[in-house]
Image 1 (tube, rainbow, N blue to C red):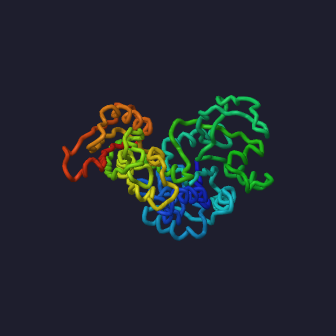
Image 2 (image 1 turned 90 degrees about the horizontal axis):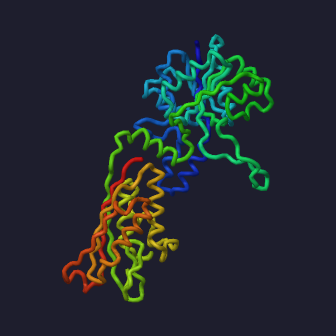
Image 3 (image 1 turned 90 degrees about the vertical axis):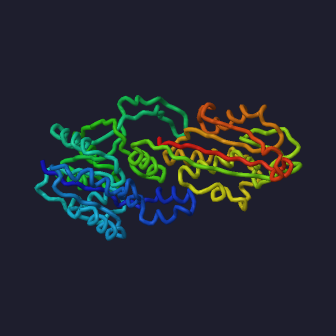
Length: 398
């Protein structure tokens, strides 16, 4: 069995760039080379996609179809990684055009063509072998996963027409394996073939038999920054390490301000001065989470010069950071905190504070510790006009 491998990598990475922009300009430089050159476990995403096929003996030539501007950077990476056998061809405006540009250069004595998305770096060699073995009884083979969500068919007005039987549905992935001569025939016979989203659909349109191999592995396509971060969590976090972050905040208390701690309003004549609601405890926890996941500090995220955060409740800020941690593949394990305050006494409110913090972090209250202490009347506390909070947060890879 002689197979030509085509890795489609000609996309513009537009959605990936847009996801970086949504995160803020501090990620801007990462977008210049697109998603395929982003680092994943010490190698570019595209290199992982190529290495999965390196030890498959049936694959006797490999092409990468990529945007012309990235040809030289790719050739440099291929040389560094010892992938000098890989040939680089010009990518097209569509995925189908990219595949066609490579397909025309494949050896005529090869029976099969395997196509893989360059942005699927987690495919493994055993899965590839399953696809190859299934080729005996079909004109093409598609790797696919089961559709898990409930699917609804709706009309143009958004009204549900029926619930689709998901047991017969599969989400097509790559690699896809097709007979070379049939794929060439499909490109030449099918109208608008250059708009086809995969090779299986082209074979379907000329009436050929395509078999699906359903797998249970995780074979994501990296489309956004969140996809990349989940892949990093998966491939780099095999030992499931715990990271720790330290947070600190302090505020003066003044008359006429509401007093919030841990998202709970404390009855008192004075409240914390601050650009937001001045919740020093939530600020310390937020800062600790950012430290644990390597995302800077609360001032970088929520500047006191930004009117969007004027008088905003700090729970909202905390939940934004928790969402960011979730996108990067982290979950909160435990919070230990200390509130240093002369007055009022916090004993009646500690349990309510624990439960509110736990709710914001989506963890059980038993994983939240809130301790309240005084400075024994030391002058540095200015007669009770200061609140100081410290927090240590532990985060684990999901």
